[in-house]
Length: 207
Length: 207
Image 1 (cartoon, each protein chain N blue to C red):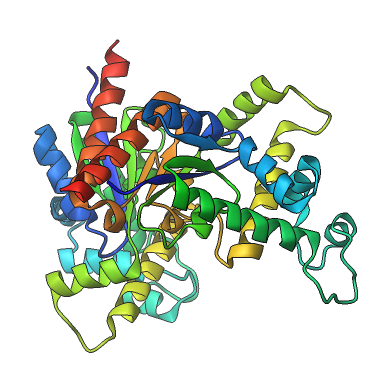
Image 2: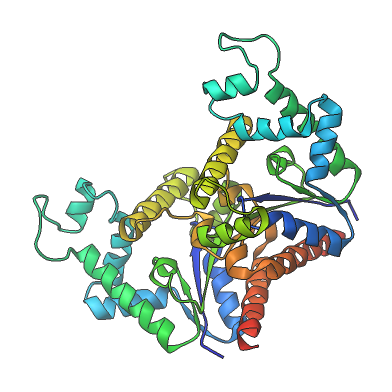
């Protein structure tokens, strides 16, 4: 049987990280979320914090904030920006991982980077605002910014980062094989559904 | 156990009708697709053909085509248009069905009409252009209009009809509990996934 990979894209606060972790544990395969960040840091020499910021602020092409954070010249450039360097490094790392081992990869445009990999299952996890707010407050606690604003800001940044590098909209079903509403189904049933689909597709391919 | 309903929204050519039919058959519950059309025709007095056209052309609010087809005055009106009459009748019929029996309902904004029904599972079936084109050509044959144009035209009409009556965008994951790519998973695995989720949620509610 060929090695198989699951990518998990997720809305902030939807429980995608935790669902991916349980899927990997149940299947006994690797799990890459924060671990990916470490690999990118090693490859590029940037700090993990800077890499996380790059994914958050590599947004509007002409945004002053983006250019300041990324130290990108406002008047053109001849070499890749730090954000581009990070993206190309993560694409290389994700492709190598998928080549090398069966695993679960969370975020970082992995669904797009591995879009032509037929042995790859692409999942999207989402939920309603109320459910996401509850999960975020439990996990990260409250802050000065209202919770709804924290969520929509994060969603916006992810959408812009994704469409900047992939040239397709973020979070539309057509990017994925299976989209699960973790608020409506619960995390356990999301995990169960992903494993059911993964196992049945693997079985089919073995026949 | 409380009665349960499954709504299936689908892209044209994604196999949603056939998947819904298999789900209903496997679960031994009612299936409403064309049958819904008959009930609406009975309730409103309009022909089935006219009702189908209403769902296709009840589009841009100021579209000349819409107003001509629906015999709606271009200069305001005091009573519901035929399209509105049809929508309100279908909403009433769908609510009654969901109240009365466990069943699968395909299309007709049923996901929106039953959005507050907690015993209802909302599914979206979609697929890529190539897969949909293949299925449409097999089922309906070729026509003068290029297949890709037939698909995008139908998608556009469904989107406009849906957002006109529901005030929310059509086909975004957040409207549904589960979204399945029938081209990537195959119809059988879509049916299996829906039944798995349905049964597990029902079991949970009985505990």
